[in-house]
Image 1 (cartoon, rainbow, N blue to C red):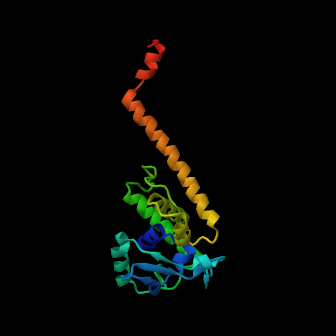
Image 2 (tube, one colour):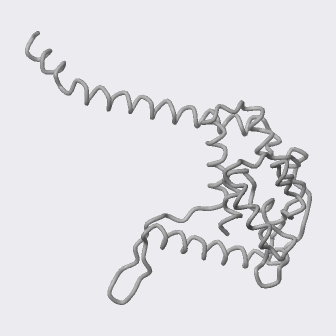
Image 3 (cartoon, helix red, strand yellow):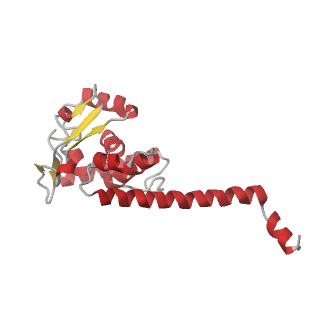
Length: 204
C-alpha cells in the first residue's frame, strides 16, 4: 500500500479513484495521471463506475519526487491495476482493501518505533492510524501552502462545487493565521520575556 498511499497523498485521489486506477492511466513520461472512473464498494462486490460528477474526470500532475517509486512499482507489477488485490491481481474488494490498509498502518507504526503488544509489554503506538481521506486533505493543504490558486485546486481535487474548495482554503487560511499569531507571541516572549510587564508594574 506504500505506492498507492503516495498517489493519494501527492495526487489527491479519492480511495475509489485509486482502486479503479490502471497503469494505462499513468503517463510517466508526461508525468500525468488521468482519472476517469472510480470503484464502487457498497458491499464486498466491487464495480467500476464513472465519477459522480464531470469534475471528477481530470488529469493530475505527478510530482517529480514520487516518479521513481511509480516507475519501480510499474516495472514490478503483474497486474493492470495500480493497487490490485494481491491474491488475484484484479480489483480490490472492500474487505481486501480494509485488510491491506490495516496491515500498512501496522507496518508504519513499527517503522516509526512502535511495538506490538506482548505478555510482558504493552502496545506502543508511535504513529496514529489515518485514512485515505486524510491523505487527500493533506494534498489540499499542500496546494494551499504552495500558493496554488483556488480554481486550479478545485480542478486538481475534482470538486464539482467551487464552494467546497473555497471552504477548505478558508479553513486553512484561518489555521495559518492562528498559527502565525502563536508564533509571534512565542517570539516576543523569548525576545522580551516579562520585561515590559515588570516595568509597567513598577510605574516606569
